[in-house]
Image 1 (cartoon, rainbow, N blue to C red):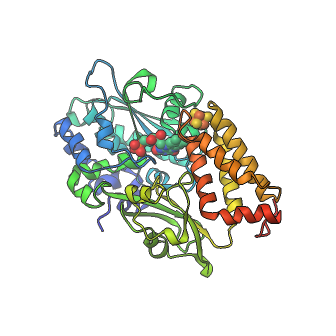
Image 2: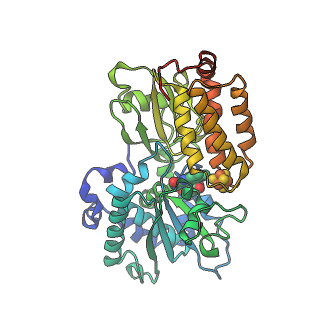
Image 3: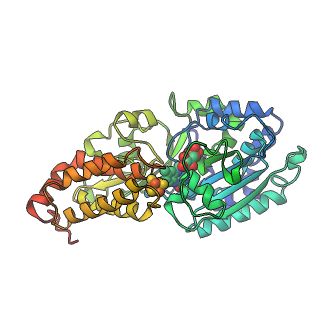
Length: 422
Ligand SMILES: Cc1cc2nc3c(=O)[nH]c(=O)nc-3n(C[C@H](O)[C@H](O)[C@H](O)COP(=O)(O)O)c2cc1C
Ligand code: SF4
């Protein structure tokens, strides 16, 4: 299979510009600036490149949302917050091949006539922020960023901005507020960032992986990228597999790879002869699947048909012997902690989910608690400023729908059948 990104991960030295250039790095940017701007956007559209930050919105279509009026400067914000549990692909790009991202964002900025880009990187990624800083400096020194890039007359300034370690700051409007120095609270939409974004200016927010695919698309053409995936999901994806598998890690795979193949062939199956119990397919916010539901393609549409999401393609493998009530409690702790508190259904709902799931696990559940959890979820979904409330409610619902008997048993026996002590 042709690879788009992982060839650049092979060697630590790819992070330095000389090695990157030795393998053709920045030639895509050189090609792009010789192309009409619309033609670059058209290639990305043809590539069927779906956003890799979780929602899967087509990148070329998003780029087309910028207002035609050029009287206000535009901004690009790279979302490098990567806070979704189970997701660690962007980190790999930034630590192994940061120039892929720098080249991709430079092409995007040229295509969209953007002269200012920010890379908003998660606060905990101290090492990656240092590597990115170095890559950006190297790109300036080599004439790929800054004034008059490659003699084209095009100027681009890039700033690496470190966040302070809040999951919610990955939600794109919260990213913008945080970047502006405000509290990292999501904004009501509309207006969408493409019209009023960073500092009130038209803004495109794209994920690290999304932009890192762009150099390949420009070099090889959008159609060739599209052909690496399936009908509506172009290209390859970085799939992260975590949990007790033989070979956890990041793998570059076609967008429509079979999920069973990912777990059993690519990641080598479970360790110590364990059996599979469940899979969270696309990061912790996505509904869980039972072991008998994994004979399915991992593209966005196939996952949606099954009632779940490809999300950030962070596959979390759960072995037999895991208490699903406990697993859900761990997730609910996370969302209750990370809710920004602006919306009542989310602030109260995530807190109540944590509390009710916690008491079931502790053997103190009440017979009505299952209905209470489902009711809480109904009152959270689609009723808030951002999708964090849904991100908490969707796994809660799915754990109950798929593993109801475990919740009932905890309540009936007033203890954890797996012997978990709270
Ligand atoms: C609670 C929450 C957290 C998010 N965290 C991230 C993140 O860490 N990184 C990211 O790229 N997108 C994240 N997103 C999605 C972004 O809002 C946005 O859709 C994405 O950055 C757009 O880029 P893309 O179109 O290239 O995928 C998050 C969304 C929500 C609701
Ligand atoms: S849904 Fe939750 S995280 Fe999102 S804005 Fe509302 S309270 Fe904040």
